[in-house]
Length: 332
Image (tube, rainbow, N blue to C red; front, side):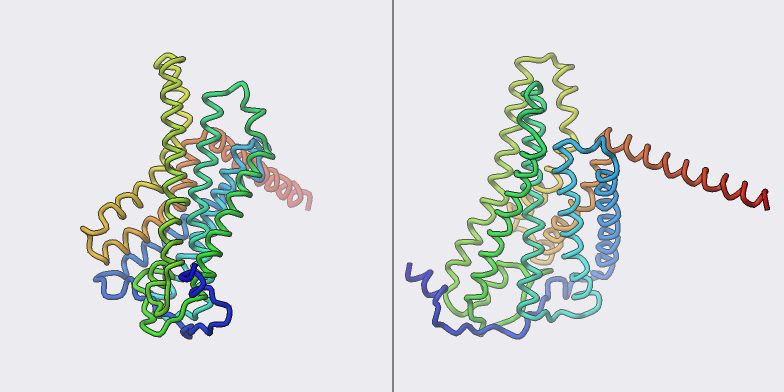
């Protein structure tokens, strides 16, 4: 307890720097081409996720509990890339590496919250697929709007609380050494290691956070699909099993895009160059929000049909408008 009390002491004056300096991409050759790529990824992410959200809001056929999680995933992806990418471009492309202490912690909060919430969204969608395939007759009872809203809400509350604890512990540190953050954003691990007083509580949080936010959700998703495969192999023919499993392809692609790059980066951490690691982690942050809406549009029949209906309605409105205008002109 003494270690925690020393970091959380009430009558201690903590020395906070006026600003941090983010230097993650500095010194990497031809990095400006990567900034152009990031800008392209950001635009595609914003347009794609906004389109998915609008389609779900406009089409009453997409008001099932599953699309509560899909809508939330699109919202998180939109918010996450909006919080991360513009600041990355401002820091490196426009050469503004200094970020005030409080702004840095705010930046950290939004980035970590959105990146973490993606994981819990994938858990919610995995549960939806599990019940839909294994207990189809009980799906309407087990997966209700109220249940899915509660699942998403509890995910938000848990993630926000976890990130707030991380941020609070950083405010109980004194920084009297370097203020240079060797990352592409205000990274929690990079910040607490700069402290000159005891940072053991932040170290504990940094060890627990990946387990709770990354490993446990991944374990649940993998076990749910293992259960699906085992059950289908016992009660269904190969053709029926493949037909049922086909409904999971979109979700499996989302899981692979989110988890696989992180697994590769952290398992090869000691073998790759620090610059390559920073670029890999940045791609892990920005790529899933760009690809998620594309995958859902291509893999989900309901969304494709909804897009077609919306486009047809817009075409009809324009056609009717042109006809009305033509009639008005002819009468004149």
